[in-house]
Length: 178
Image (cartoon, rainbow, N blue to C red; front, side, top):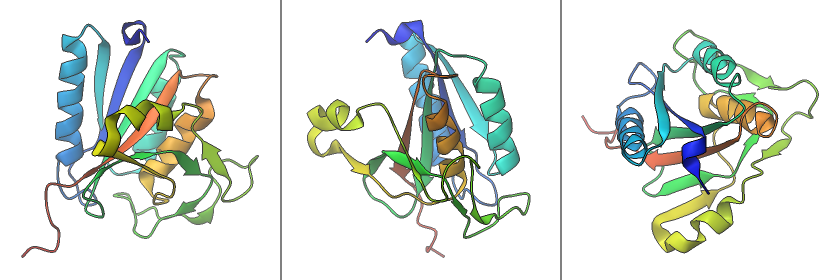
């Protein structure tokens, strides 16, 4: 696979009222640096924790049919790197985004059934099988902002972008600490 033929967009949420630390943005910057070192055309896209920013980012990126998307999200709910295998056609925000939007029970795409799985056409399992216990494949993520953006990306693979993967990483902080 010659990744130098593609433009790689590495997307991470920045530290704000929703995203408590900058783990994902720091990791995204490092990934972009390493990709550029290897001759890849890579760009880092920091976005705020808002539906509006996710929509704007996707509109920008979908103009590039050879775009490869790497979405990085940090969470305190895992201690292992997870590759998210699919998205869901639903929004069930447990908290509001930074603009106060908190859609619950809505479809992302009207033409699909509510809750319908949007699979990743990339065979993630075969890709990570050689890495043994470094990663796990996760089949049920939150229905928050990254599900919203990931659903948009997965639905666009083969039509307006080349591919997408969502990597969930452990957060560097413990939000339960005083």
